[in-house]
Amino acid sequence: MAFPHDKVKKKYLQLNGEAEADFFLSQIIEEEVYLALKQAIDILPPKIRTIFYLILERKTNAEIASLLGITEEAVKAYRKRGMKMLRIRLSNFWILALLIF
Image (cartoon, rainbow, N blue to C red; front, side, top):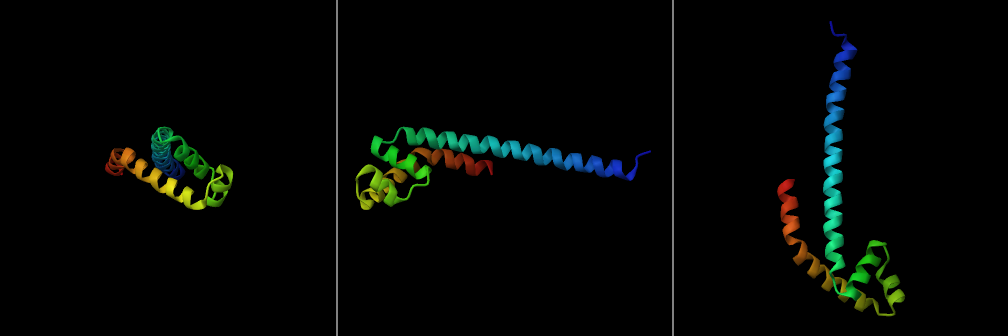
């Protein structure tokens, strides 16, 4: 004979197991996205690559300009050019990601 708390415990374990599986799947996908982005950034031209790593460090355009000795407008231009390159390099990856979700 199953006690009511056993049913609750069983249901909790079922739900928790599903949540855990979803969590691990999300972690794997997040890791894959990060890896793809890092690989795409690594093959950008050196100046653009440096700017993107500074962006990932949450530096502002003004801070990046000051660090690199260039104008904010130049940072914006490099950033725009880099985004265009990343969009092209990661286009297939984003299509795959959309199909998964």
